[in-house]
Image 1 (cartoon, rainbow, N blue to C red):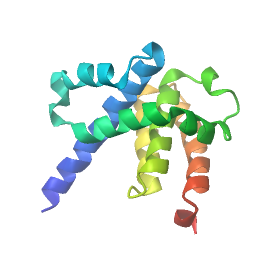
Image 2 (image 1 turned 180 degrees about the vertical axis):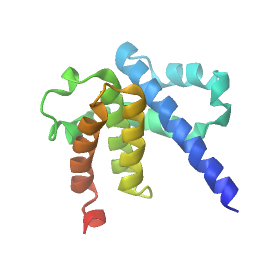
Image 3 (image 1 turned 45 degrees about the vertical axis):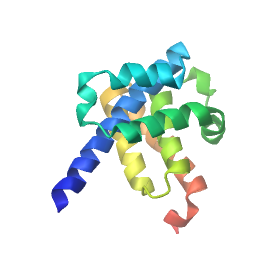
Length: 146
């Protein structure tokens, strides 16, 4: 019984990784969700990805980027536009999960974001991502900190 749950966890982890890459691409190109979705879903590597979750993340982040950016900006030490694009994509992804996926424990969201930042971000970018997201989590999920 634990095997399907583990596979689902891995498929979601992969969905986050591809979603972060899709958001990075969107930040650079401003392509529509459908253009990005079509390009990513055509990749062979997407076979082991929770594609429904990938699409929910990317669509949700693109549609809600203004409100997500407002949530993040309160805790940033510089304008969002001055952030590294990889870290910006990771912050938007995690902020979306914190705000719109209440079934996910905030610790899972933060751990996944930190892993992405360690893999794709600047040398100490994961520390910055962790600090910002911890503050966002305290604001949007106060009951989990009680």
